[in-house]
Length: 191
Image 1 (cartoon, rainbow, N blue to C red):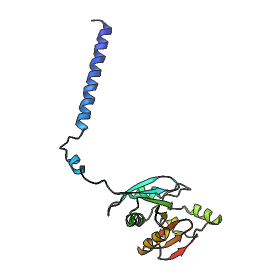
Image 2: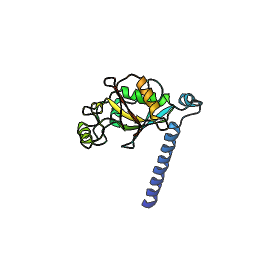
Image 3: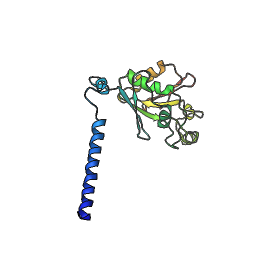
Image 4: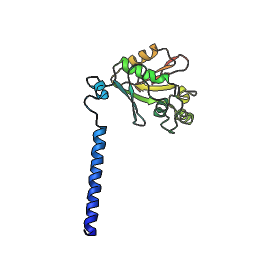
């Protein structure tokens, strides 16, 4: 046998071995019809999700609507970070409950975040430019979120958030969003 023929035979054997290996790997990973994982999913409705969209970063955070289901704290904190500085903070976890409760109450599939955490530097800049932001805003502590539900009148969302008696609630009809925070209970209206 020549050297060239021997090399071709070895390459062919190696290729055949690789194909056998790949076939065994895919058939082992493929679930069988009587697999318990498949039986648990068949005929079940999909997990009910609400998509929370950050209007500044265009990121979407899917959250399970069922009671007790929550995203990891670090994920929620990062999602609501200051869009101007990119800095996250320790957000109050009760805010996630406010967002999900509003979505469930109004059977909404999407929540739009207008503002989450605001770095103190960004908050000061907004004040200097004449925007309606408090000097000591709850946003700078990670205790507030401004949001809306597409298709839900802002006044109805306001009433629902006020009924939670969680903290401050601001109504911004021209900008079409509601402010919810976990600070002292108070109410106000803006533009």
